[in-house]
Image (cartoon, rainbow, N blue to C red; front, side, top):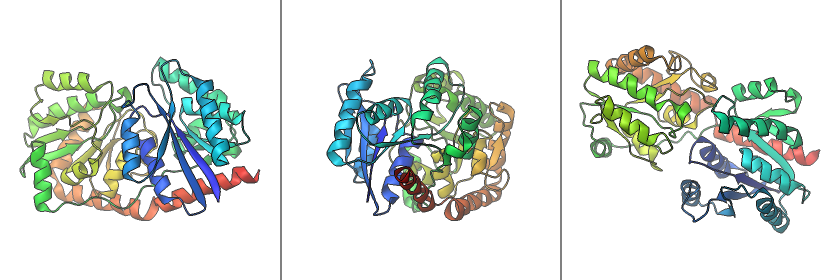
Length: 375
């Protein structure tokens, strides 16, 4: 039995959080997995959606007090006490603050440390500073991993030795929610669509690199050519209110829905017709994998790790990032060609089922834990 702890600082419930919950549900009986998440003051903060999602899967997550002044050492002492109390052997850290705390805790205990990197890019001064810190922390971990081939290559380009880096794809469960005709109609009606609408769905946190503004502009162009189009954009984040304002200024507020954070996003997937993912930068977006598992035709930016799971013209359509004309054309193409859209969706589901198994991905994670303990 290997005693492992996942250490996470979460800002919104998204792909990283989903990947961890999927791993947790698929670990073999040889892994005793515990969960630790930073908790912002007052409770009910950015960590709450993750805690709720974990509880729904039967996982008990312990919270570690955190705050705007970044109490790294007090947090590390708390984590180190948990490591000693439960005999944790491997501490798996996810994102910069968790990396800092995990390495500090490892100075107080003999625990082995692993970190997983998800994406590198130019995200503005604050997140670029965090990436700069990460670069300098990597050599201190017992094992560093990347969750997609693009992130693997980017990590090597930043100077980390390739022979010390491990590829840990997230994988994705094959299951997908299905709705009967009445259930599908009910969900569509809840968000303003009827059987005559073609519904586009974008599942993403409202961060600048997710390019919601670009999608809204392209959707405005497409909906003028095809008035049956609707767009659902669930999610939360700092760009949500600016996007609401943009939809109004573009005159499409009656065609766009902003449902907020939706733990039942798979119901929306089952009720939508086409998934779009026009972000500027990605790893392998698990929202895209969810759509593929649901057999949805996909329009996505050729960005980051997405070409590792999507094949242009076979299981989805690629457009260049921020190419408004090409994105508009792709939307109109799939909306007017249901047979083509269905064929893309079938191949997408086949790929997830046969080539991107969650079980195989989780066995690779377990192999890394055994590797660091054997060193």
